[in-house]
Length: 251
Length: 327
Image 1 (cartoon, rainbow over the protein chains, first blue to last red):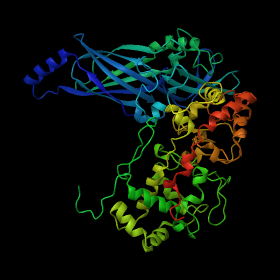
Image 2: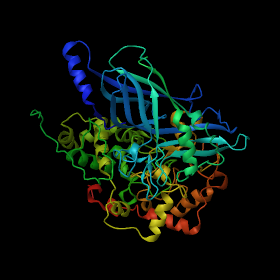
Image 3: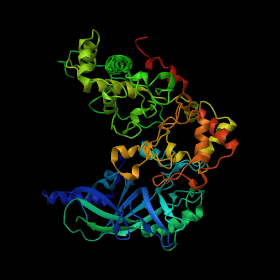
Image 4: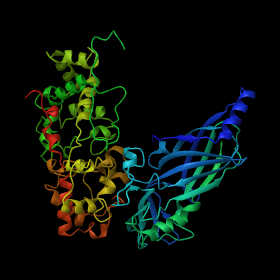
């Protein structure tokens, strides 16, 4: 998807780069930053619609759709300097091209941490806060007085009575009232496997963790209609803190 | 600027409400005044059909928001189609066409009906011969594309250009967004039903086009006769899924659903309220399937209908730029 990328460079980066560039002409000063997202249920690759997974509550469930925003990326290097990247990206498991996210050009450095918002911050999560595209239009959160966007749409079916008869669930996250409900994710970046100017982060999102610990998400209690249900949103927020994992860098 | 060109087509300027996303225009088929006008003529000209009796407009009539008021359109051999004619409204924003999404662009979409035996039942070879032999078209193609070699690719490009101009953005709903008017009490109640979990229309029809352009099985049948998207993908999981139609100009586009089974909007609302049927491929977005749907009261149905009526854009069906140029 088209994204607006505004990269704010800390002054020290610019100085360091200019000095570095003056002494080492053959070494690149900047590289491309990619996040390649993979989706798993525990350690198994997610198979939309076909595969039945098992929640802690005992219900079998299938995943039909999953799309969500990742925004406000911050990279930190080994000197403690931060690079803030004002960006919004929509990952959609049914649109493979969205899963390889080209964040943009960044200065070459030894980055050691990556943080981002799973969802959207308050500034962006307002009516018309994102670029006017059909993809963003389809994520709008239209509750009167709380207009903005869904952070995540996660839809499927679950076996409500353990009989094989599947009912529908919608896990739609977003704000309710004064509760912003977005999640800040902060992850250590492992040492790159290959030294190169580009930064290619392979990341995993584990659906299973969203439905488990610290709270077991109960499909029978929250099957659908959770857009204005802060109890459900709170559970998902608390469960969502550790669903992302960096698999490798520059593999 | 290429000064070797005999004609320089004039760029066609669209005036679209700012609430709409930017209209995607293919790089190899920019909108031009000459191209759009040629497309309009080809859209209304029966020259493309096997027996020269039908045009695109035979099944996509402006009066019906470029759909057909018959449940199934009738082809040149008096053969009935098996799906209701989809309205052509704001189609330039989509990248899947037909109820089963078998075409990926307006250009590709326009290729199909000419040779389809239950539609125009002709051939592109014959159609192109006729166009080349006509008194008017060679000059018009030259002006639109700087091409004297008329081909089916240029024909569908012209038709697609006209199709992209069929924009409806002047309904009461649009006027409210532009703060030019306001909703009545009933319309506002209907809007609140539409855009909340209660009636939950918005998850498929919530954007400015009133279609998410995706494919859903909305629970019309327990055992669908028409497999819909499965015809294209061959996946069993796609059985009974059809492209979400726009709700704009609903008042003109009856009958409703892919097979035109419902004659009135009241029937459609009743269906979503209490007539939904479960099946293995029903969309997860369908709520309360075990109860037959979202269970609206008669008052709520009436309010929802009032809101849906605000999607009516009479200027669209009266727009002289979209009319038959041969009349």
